[in-house]
Image (tube, rainbow, N blue to C red; front, side, top):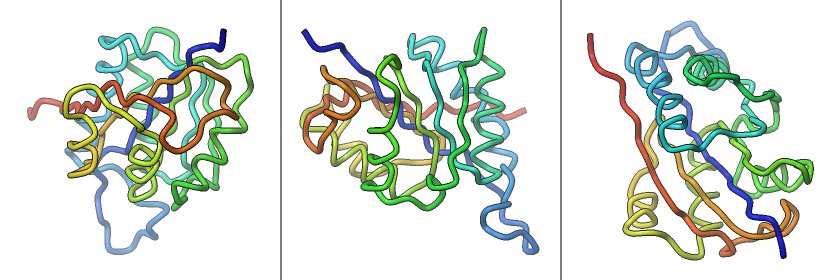
Length: 173
């Protein structure tokens, strides 16, 4: 029997738009600083702890993971992948297919529109209205949970089940 795999797709938290910062170097804004830890808490509460994280090298993505990982007991290894910045769904899927076979749950953290397109392409079916919601909007801090049986190299469009779509939000001070 093929192993059950889980792909967690996390969009970075809300960023700021400083006038002098290049897009790659934009930091998280106040809402992002609140929402990123909420994403980490959601991962714990939903029992969606990754074995490995592939994270965009963009500052807002790195900050999102640092704050989310701070909510986990023991954060998993993280690989900062330059090719995830601005990647298309096809590029993201290529990175996922290279994941070692011993990884059961992978979290990929990056940017739209690639992440939303990846979720919609992979989800052949969904629980409840998760697919409709993912198609309508994949906001900052959104987390999609996709499952399938097989290897990472087996993952193809339409082969996964979208089991959850969460949009964790932190509380305003």
